[in-house]
Amino acid sequence: MVMPTPQPEFPFSAIVGQQSLKTALLLNAINPRIGGVLISGPRGIAKSTMARGLADVLPSDADGKHPPFINLPLGTSEDRLTGALNLQQVLSEQKVVFEPGLLARAHQGVLYVDEVNLLPDALVDLLLDTAARGINVVEREGISHTHDARFMLIGTMNPDEGELRPQLLDRFGLCVELGDAIPVSERVAIVRQREAFEHDPHGYCHDWQPEQANLTERLRLAREALSSVTAEDWVYEHIAMRCQSAAVEGLRADVTWHRAAQAHAAWRNADSITAEDLDAVEGWVLAHRRKAAGEPPAGGSTPPGGDRSNQGSSRQQSAPQSPEPGADAKTRNQGGQWGAMPPQPQSMVAAPPVDLPDNPARVTQGTRHLLATRSKKKGKQSLGRYATGEFSRKPDWFATLAASRGQWPLKEWRFKRQRAGQPVLHFILLDTSGSTLDSQLFARAKGLVQQLAAKAYSAREQLAILGFGNDRVDSILPKRRAPSDMLNQLETLGGGGGTPIRDAMQAAVRAIVQWQRREPGLQVRTYLITDGRTRQSLGDIGPVKDCVVIDMEQSPVRRGRARSLAEQLGATYQIFPPMEAL
Image (cartoon, rainbow, N blue to C red):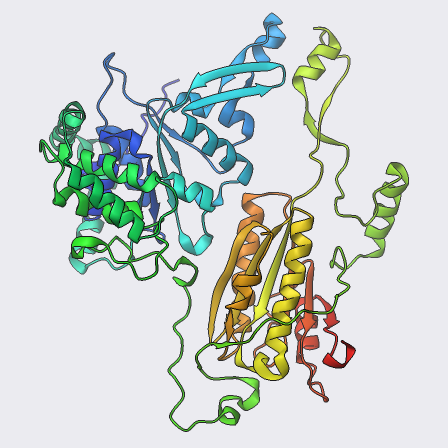
């Protein structure tokens, strides 16, 4: 049987436009110690094509072996990533042999992760640890194995499909943000090039082979010249001052900037680092690390995709225009919809204890019977925090083989124990609109958020807070382990403007889907804290699992909008205690 010839990748040299990304990838190919490239941008702008095309132009090693290009699929298991027991040899030869995983295969090559922001958290932790140490350590299933795993990390992501964990974001040396504004001339050239490639892939690649070979040779020469590129004292001082001005955390940015500038000088065939090299890579080094708001890069250069210092609001809706002069509060508050207004501070007021259910999900008769049965078997578990069994369905192969003492068929099966329980995330949607400024509602709502945050911290659970007001949705606290103290952050939080509750719920549903795709088993408890002063409907958003709507309205005559919103979401409804109850 004749196997079909695999179709080649689109030539790196033939890709039209995207010069910034091409340069960033080539610099990492010159010096993999830069730490990899994160490619961020919308769909359909050749992120994956660029990353895959890089493999064909990488120089071979001293033995003539071409560097590997390893793709890490989103469905990869932990065993496949780190390596595990070779069952075939165990069964056939009765030997415990280590089967290398993708980390071992990527050594001295490229490890490519498409949609890296959707990678499960457990795999992210393993990838981070190995990338930082350059060594993969496997201690499991009776195996104790260590091997080198130094690779160039390339990841792509679409920000609209979820943010990347901060731990992984900083681990990438460079971040190139691509926009979707492509000139008409480039769009025409791209389509024509793609049509020619699909008509005759092998012939097309053959035509571009001279350019590919020239690029490979230039990379080889730049690698050889890298160690001889020098830097004067002012280079280090410039990098340190710019990093300090950008308020980056740690020194990874400083080290990465120097390595990237050195690679850029080697790419230009220069003997020393100049201002041109520093300016060329600054945007890519600081794009995902800059903390100081409004801090532009030096030399007038703008990082691809613009400044990321305010990532939480980069995809927010534009705030509406300020109300006309003379417009009073009554005009702005018609029908419960407040117009644009500057955020108004309101000091936090301690909230009375709110008796929230441990699990807000509606419990059917069938699930009650199941939980009751499980409780009788365990003697402990019922409607508690965790509801996992003692053993999973995943075989523990080493324990099974040991218990069967090499006999075949296997006499005894052993299964891996499940983890202690499911991780829990408290997701708070806080109404920060102008209507909550009445009767200190906003101040008391912040007190309730502090109460929920303290509860999550004491239970060592995760927390995320989304604010919606002034016709925009803001990330107040990204998903992370609940902090020990949120007083300062909540105290400085202002409120005002309209109530985009529909946008907030849509953003929340998208975030929950992405979090649970990355972290299977994650239990998300959503708290919608609002006074219900909105005309928007949430009926078409659908039921939101484990959701509680907390009604902050304090009017003598309640409009009942928050209760209606709870019914539309299929959520539990709870009234916040009135001021008189304090």
